[in-house]
Image (cartoon, rainbow, N blue to C red; front, side, top):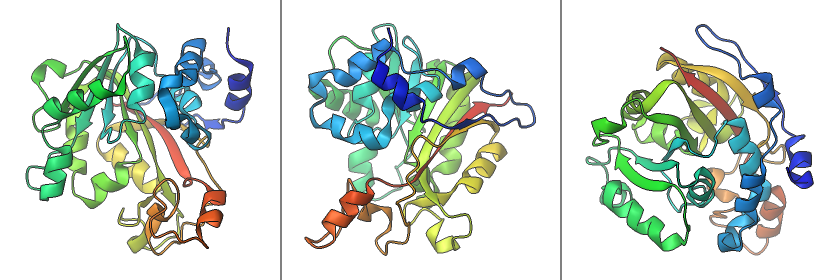
Length: 284
């Protein structure tokens, strides 16, 4: 049975099904779907440790329900970084699922980028093995320039958590989206979350350098690469985020970059950033 608390949290989600040329709206049943008992078990697992403190801002159960992620799927998680969502997805997808860490082509990038994001096929599974994930999904990884052909058309979902701004500012976006289309099954979907800039913000605040991007730009770019918007949710919205920090979004938790004893309490009261939550379907 579904947990009562999760049902109540899911009721806060606002989902707007959007029809665009060649797309299908998210089914009504999926729009109203509450997080299931398997997800509740994953989130309650004591092995998550400090990860659970971020649930109030990231709403993993409601977010993954909106993205229609289900156990047994093959899911590519773009730039899993420290693995916060890895530690939710791997046990939730289960032993019949496949989790893929997906990274950009950083062969021409900085030494730091190459060290932290290069050769994910080797480095990421070794990192994930340290996270005590138990009997969960198969784990693999690849960078977009070397993803094996055997993955073509095999992926149910690609999830991009707070990385579109990096794809934009570092020039990764074209190669990433071309590869994402190649990996997805016909009708496969992309779940996208990122820090939302005001629609009237100047370019210097919407080009990714401050961490924020305009929702209309994300939708337009995804459309240009053959992805139809099929749904929006406000589950990760935060109206307290003023989005005007000189240091960009990293001023807020969890980074709290340059926070002082005086500013830290106010920043913690704001919480994590205001975020768009969008679902796209691959257009044939």
